Image 1 (cartoon, helix red, strand yellow):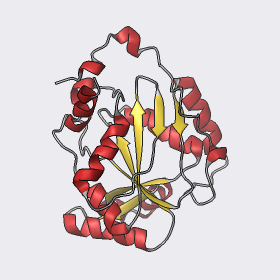
Image 2: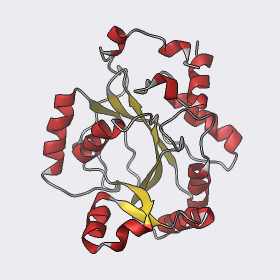
Image 3: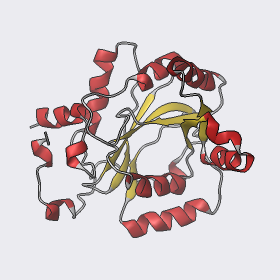
Image 4: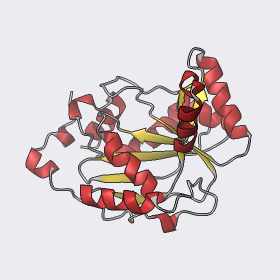
Length: 231
């Protein structure tokens, strides 16, 4: 079921309604603690690509060295075409997890390390969670990006591993939205997990109110519910 708030014509969707509250983000806004790539040329090229596409990055990235970063909603492979340049334009380094077998080829492993892929053995779910917690426990700067929907298709609920990872590592959760209505990558308010998932999840859901994905019919149920409740 598609939320009523998203039942709008293509002509409306094609005209981005820019955020009037959230400021535009650029590389210069990142604090000294935020994980960075440190590349001089990539931000220039990525910024040009982002501008040409009509997308921009808004919000605020707190000056912290560690966080679990949520990427939502993710309904299409096309999302990466806009999301990746936005990260390179900011020169921010958000790491993701990948199969450890991908690192068997040395040259490819170097590329994956540069991108920010962390090798994990997905064959053991418990070990993945603990390995991720241990990665934070080293104290090294780390923004770990996760997609709690776990799929680009419709899902009735989110995978909650991201929450227990944040609790176990003692780090905050940074929600990031990709809004096709405003053509914005939106960094939103930090959520510090208390250990009470039933109380904390609504704090995250609420920040995605009104966010429009590329494919409306694939929007996860929690985000459909938050938008229907807003009417």
